[in-house]
Image (tube, rainbow, N blue to C red; front, side, top):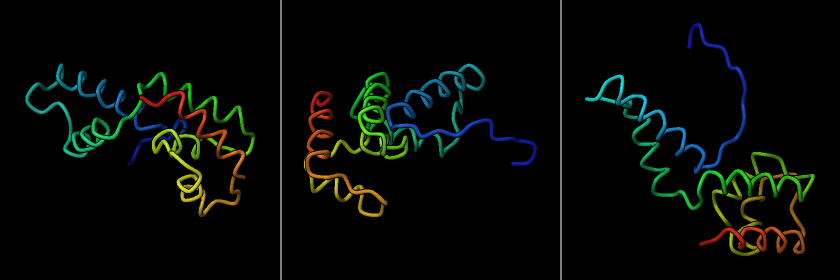
Length: 120
C-alpha cells in the first residue's frame, strides 16, 4: 500500500462491518453500476449478512457496556463477545482460552446476562 497511511485502528463488530460494507456498496453503485465492489468486499459483505446477530447501533452499545462493566476487557475482546454471543460459561472459557485473564464464573454469568438482554 504505497502512499497510504494508517490514520487509526479500532476493532469492529460484524454488524459495524456490515454497515460499512453496505455504505461502500452504495457508493460503488453510483461510481460503477456494473461492478460496485471488489470480489473480496462482496464475499465479506455476504459473510457479514449471514452472521450478523445485532443491529450496528446495538452492537456498539453492547460493546461499550461490556468495556464499562469490566476494566480488564479491551475493545478486541468486547467485539469478539458481541460477535459470538456466547450462551454459557464454557463458551466464554473458549473465547478467553489464550488470553491472560480468564473471567471468573460470576463475571462470566454477568456477561451472559448482559448479552441475553440483546438476544432476539
